[in-house]
Length: 559
Image 1 (cartoon, rainbow, N blue to C red):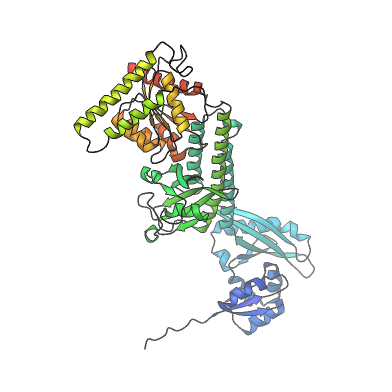
Image 2 (cartoon, rainbow, N blue to C red):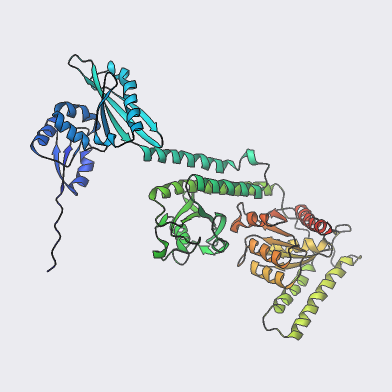
């Protein structure tokens, strides 16, 4: 038979349950873990201490002086030595005549600061009543304290000594200071979108937002590796907007707001509940983010109690995040949500003042020609196509190019009036240029292609990101216009594919969103993005940006 371990004797606690005591709240908790004796008055405390021994005595600080005066000197010292707060007695000459174990455990600088404060507060207590107290907050190096000083009077009622009760408030002070810093940092994020930054373009605001967010996360929250994903309410997809320290693979991983199969980020977005993962090796929900990750913290970004995104933080240390970190991250996450939303609203306001795309600029023949070109390219890139088939498809593509050239050179009016460009509308800079237009919105894609055709360019259309990348891999382009948010592959992936195929081909990204889905604008801007166009836009804006991009590339080659 296995021997049963001896049970530990219960701790014995004497609990003062006077009129101001939180007995009703604490007693059930204490009684579950210790043998609690309840005393209803100071006299009962004195009697209990005289008759029995206790491991701890719990009483309100307001009863400290009566207890000290009533209980015998040795017994009082035993009680005061057992409490976690520091206690000291200072005489009228300012000499520290006694301190308990807790206060003696602090550095000498703390003890001296307490003594000096007791001396400074004596005049306030000299003329007060018998139970007068004075309080002061102390800061000694990195530590913070709350000091309560009470008077001990002589038989004539004069001030004889003072008793100081010292509570260590360092953790509470640090929390308050951190909350204040987070609040200030949050206001700074939101302030990015007011008059002070009105002169900045949206990509510049995004960059400023990212820089401040990275700084705040690292300096205030000690978050080195993090990412912010924004929720698309239509598709449920979570797109990376800003990040620091995460790999490109992690940023581009498709994640949706679902409880299963989409990692912790998807789970948090779906449930709206924060999630602390102390050990990623033991959590089946975890999806890789940073190399050597050991733990993570993920909180929802809330706007009016609606989840609009997720902040994910990772650490290479196990169990690196506490519940306090979670609270701080949730507060800061609300500021991030507000900043992103304000940026979105500013973009919409800024763009709508520019007017809508003109509906009357359509070239009837450009669409069927582009359909032929797109279909031929698809067949050409299909694996296993016979050489003869490939030769014929290349011939079809070349024929379409010649037809487009011919259309631009026709001087007489077209068969259907009003659809060909008016005299003088062709652009010398765009004439003959092969331009890829990638957008999953049919109207936008076809209208831009029509504008290009009228300008003398040769447009090729792609209805999603994957098709755009395929076309880039099989044809040469002089300019690429790509929507940022498309199925299968995003704007940055189209940009990267174009740069890999032809580093000299300028790329313009188009977006109708106030934030930067998939982080495309900021990343591509650093790598040579030619420009950004925000929907809705005017034809004049489109033409100006395209001509500027082509001209810049031409001057670069000339130089």
